Image (cartoon, rainbow, N blue to C red; front, side, top):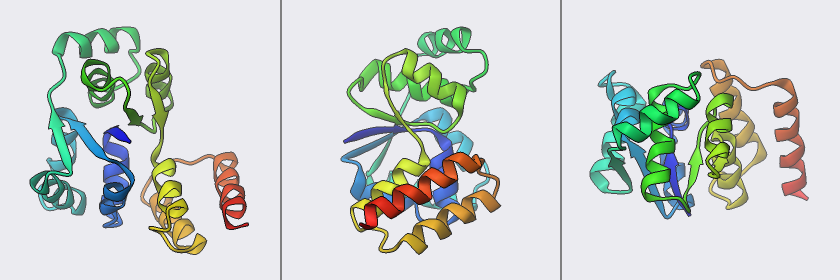
Length: 171
């Protein structure tokens, strides 16, 4: 599967030093320049270090979206930021068959409006568990709890569904 990533999954997986989880899950990972800038602006943060390494190794590629397309998306959906609009623009320009990983609710609505396959950071974590990259439910819950402690928003309903889904996978 080819994926276009927004900053949130890279930041939260990076803070936990788990950005490598993306590598075996996705055939190709792409980020827009705007996402690269957002993550690397704090040079020595764990997520910046890991992202630069992934780009150097070639398993994450950086693309420049069309400014016109990005502005059009922002004009239609004023609640989304430049990075989210860039993710959608890159997907529409070059990778319509790709999935996008975006957590912001408004940005997900925008991506779905354009017919894109949309997932969030939890999808990545659950896919890593489903593929036995993450070995236990405890490890999954630990990663998610750590993300929440660091500011990742997850409603109690979604958290409960996550736990139920983990139980289903374990059966």
